[in-house]
Image (cartoon, rainbow, N blue to C red; front, side, top):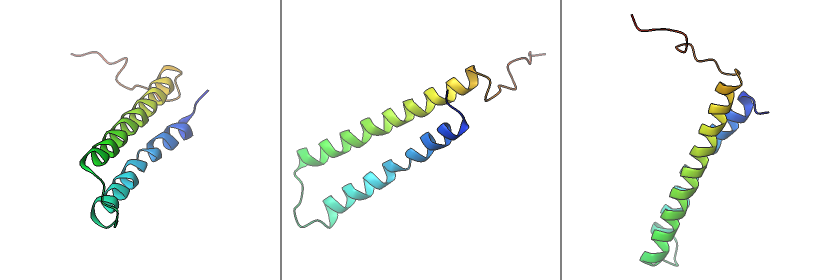
Length: 81
């Protein structure tokens, strides 16, 4: 069973995307061995896929915590008046 610390860990992993973009910036800007256009696109596609996967994992953890009552939905029982 997951808890709020798992969610915090999943949220923290989202910052990996920033580090990966820094690596791509280095490769494109400062690295003596310049990447081809295809290599750049492949790196960007990879980062995009990893970001989407991390986001899905984070959202799945969040939904699981709501479902098992670890995180409460305060608006669940409110009705519009």
